[in-house]
Image 1 (tube, helix red, strand yellow):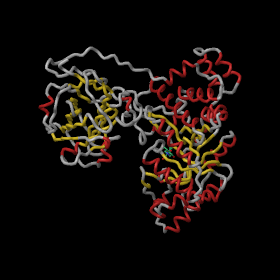
Image 2 (spheres, protein in one colour):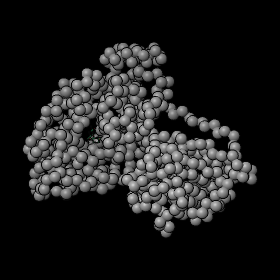
Image 3 (cartoon, rainbow, N blue to C red):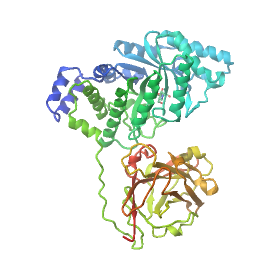
Image 4 (cartoon, rainbow, N blue to C red):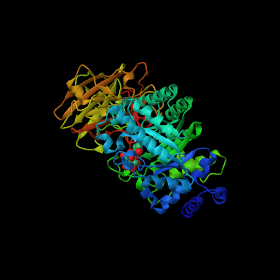
Length: 594
Ligand code: 9MR
């Protein structure tokens, strides 16, 4: 407790005195206040983490639920059929029990951790069913009455389709329901969850999981809840949509748990990114507290030091700090934000002052004062753009989509050569935008010595050479989630070889008609595109100095998937425009006759 009290004391220096009383009189920990809010607050760990005294202390003090991070999985406990080594799993269970933590078992069946003897086996359907049953029965029976929740199967969906796994090949799709039946037979009191990632909000994958659960319930297959892994990126969570998904699962009578929460980001760590991370942790816990069927909020590790995301095999930021405690076990803003929420919800005086929590939650309104319009070239039809912030698009210019750039003369060009990935997939691109009375025109002239065609299909368009532009025509530039009137339009370089069938992807791009002309050029490729100003999803009426949201990206590949990502809008430091339109910049219409 000493270390934490020291932190509180330091904080108190800048907090009103009243807050001190609570910190002194009551034990202040996440678990104490989670209990008072009637939810579990959990953390995952490996046995090796328990060797670090601070790690053990924080686990025991702050969390009332425990998940074995890796050492309970099939590949970790069984080296041959019928042979098990439970020593590390046992250590974790004993640690959790000693500290009065409810155990969340993770996981019985997961394609990424099936023992080699299963993966490489050649089993008949009946044999495979026997093996599945033996494994589940052995493990669940061993810990019967001690493990309250089980992630029975993990990640069996790949998008909305069933993932190709050894079990699917041996048994067919019924292996999933069999796993639940075997687990239920072994411990009828255990609560059985289905756990997956990328299905936190309303989407095709969460629809498929919802339908599977509904079908199981209709047919009497025992399932009690859905685990939403929640490996999120800063700025990317659609909280409303997550709440909607939890509510529909609740209507089925099922629990939901956030099972593997971490919130990551690219690039260096600074106060601002940790603030936004704290804000996102707070808002996510708030969604859980607001939903009656949300029973646990589990973080995927304690200290940033041991996060799985530091492994370059998983994520491209070896210094990322995605958890609640720093490398040296200091509580971070995200910890205090969660603490604040749990305390205020039960009427306790928070460890944070009103001003301190407001500073975490309230995004500064970025009033970007645009400089006076300048013209680098007197013949320009609109002012110079403000780098990464605003682009002035001339009005009254009609462009022919033909790959010939002569009609773009005197329209301001912007070069983009920076973003979140700086590989050899492209050198740079320049873009320009113009409008007439019927269309908005976009042009990208890409410098790329090695253009890829046919590397990926249109559904994975962003993995290969492609150009994106984004429009937010809703009038609300602060919109942080996609809604009608906001689109991401991704256009493959391959359009240069397929002039008749536009290859277009991107969020809601199917809600608007996009016309494209793409050609190869001496230095790479050129794409010209247009969208109508009047459509089912928007009516854009250009007026001098009128503003809409706008963004553009480049994806570059040199043959083995995207290695280059250039981004125009400076607000989008994390490549999150595909999910969060508040990160776009501004497109300002310019009437040269004014
Ligand atoms: O965090 C776990 C890491 O320590 C393991 O090395 C890895 C093995 O694949 O599994 C990680 O946990 C995963 C979890 O079991 C299922 N969802 C995704 C998690 C992160 O990869």
